[in-house]
Amino acid sequence: MKRLFVSAVALTAAAASVAPATTHSTLPFGPGAEPFQTHTRTESGAYDAQSQAAANVSDQNAPVTTTKQSVEGAEQTIDTTKANSQKNNSRLITVMGVTWEGEGERDVQYRTRHAQGDNWGDWEQMPVSDEGNDPSSQDHRESTDAVVVAPYEVVQVKSDAPITVSVSVTERTQVDDIIAGHAIDRPLHDTDNATPEHRDEAGELGATSATNTAYNASGTHGAYAAQNVASVDGLEYVTRSQWGASKPRCDIDQAKRNEGVVIHHTNGASKYSQSEVPGILRGIQAYHQKSRGWCDIGYNMLIDRFGKIYEGRAGGLDKATVGAHAVAVNEGTFGVAVMGTYHKPAPREVLDSLSKVIRWQSHKWGWKVDAEMKIRSAGGPGALKPKGAMFTLPRVIGHRDVGETDCPGDGLYGQIPEIRRMSTSSPIDEYANKHKLGKPSSDVKTLKDRKDTQARAYGSRLVLANGHGTYRIEGAILTAWKKMGWERSHVGLPTADAVCGLPGGGCYQKFEKGVVHWSKGSGAHATSGAIHNEWAKNKYERGPLGYPIAEEVTKKGVASQKFQYGSITWTSKNGAKVKVAKVSGNAK
Image 1 (tube, rainbow, N blue to C red):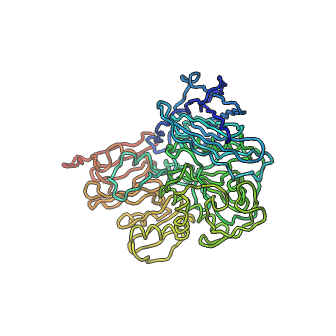
Image 2 (image 1 turned 60 degrees about the vertical axis):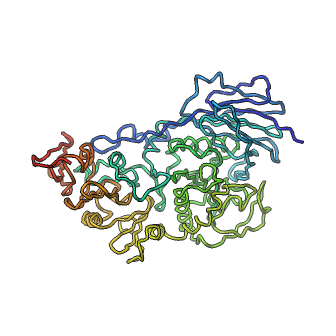
Image 3 (image 1 turned 120 degrees about the horizontal axis):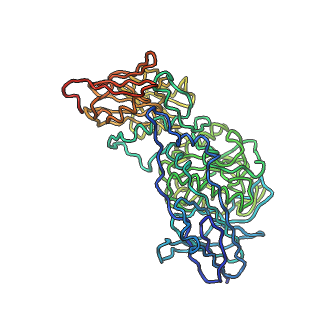
């Protein structure tokens, strides 16, 4: 019977110290996550100084501290609980992994409990990784997969042979909070009949724009500087510099082309907040580089549980960059990992983003999602076929299809057929079927001035799809958008479906750089920039001004817009000013 050596590690920034040997130790990982801070806007509609910091993320992210502790056969306790009781930082994010010298596997297990509790959970296996060797690196150590540790957890690790426990700790920074507030956030569960709510509307305008163009700079529209979101062939993602990636340790290999996509999960905590994600990514990268000896993070792309997409391995998304994610087929496949553990099905937002990534890869390399690929195995530890043998597999597979692993979890693996189907059909068709729009009345067309966006008519409805998502625009709002110049208008493209149920039977729809409101008494008109923000301060259509009844106009440096019961004017010198007409019944 193999003896299990037990150890534990405190996930704090301080180095571990060795105490007299005991059987078990109880050490808190860095305690929990606070809600992320959403960004704010100034009166002019531009991002405030704090928000502008997101443009230079790579200079401001917290460094990653990695602590290693060897367990050499005698049971040891690494207990920094008392020493760090006054140092625990509520913004710490921790990633843990185990490495060892030589070839062969280790039986490594871990268990957790709440820092304030007494009851331990069951021992769980830390799966031996079959992602590497990193083909780009000469330095490699056998290891387990990385595990992201939940807030306020105490962790114990045990093994049947000597191991090194690596703990990478990074602080969640203000820049991480900013990115979470600015990026393309979507709730876990969308509702088609949500109660109309305006409170955050002014702060969200333009948050999903992928351009940096200023529109009508002489008025207030140009004040909406667009969110710095990167895009490749219409696929929007958070860049390495934005999440604070370190530079690669060595040159990254390139293949001729990618033949398919391999889906993974990262293991570990799944109930993270969106502002914790950049720190988790930094922790995974640190484990891959500092502990496993790799050039860089192993995955080509990652997706969080909210469906946001992140650039992974360096080397260029326009190339067939060789990852370190599935030892048998690292060369010639694109590895995308969903962050968390998915023994249960992943949220719809994750499936939507996976299908976007797969469609992008299939279009780039010219293969059909529902076809098969033939790819030669590179062999290696855990590979299901020896070196030189051929795999014949679907173009979209799970990690377990080529390696001895349960990755990407039973839940997510069971969703792969649905992901293939979603990737085969267009987002517009998916949307139309979901919302029962009936038969299309036009072909799918690419917008002339926005090549990243496709549109299709369904009677009087127009459905558009791009990196923001898929939305429909119809009725009076569609007519108003047409008059403004379609995608060339100062408000850009829609970023959500219309929401109705406002006073007077009104509706509104959000666009990249503004909002269009409609009511029977006012018609459909857009607001944006400083005038929109001033209207928001006055409670929108519920306030003394009512709905807009005309578009914003600018003459000789003065921007103005008429409302049902007054007007708003704006100048660069005096800002926005409200004038309420003295008529009976103007209060809403």
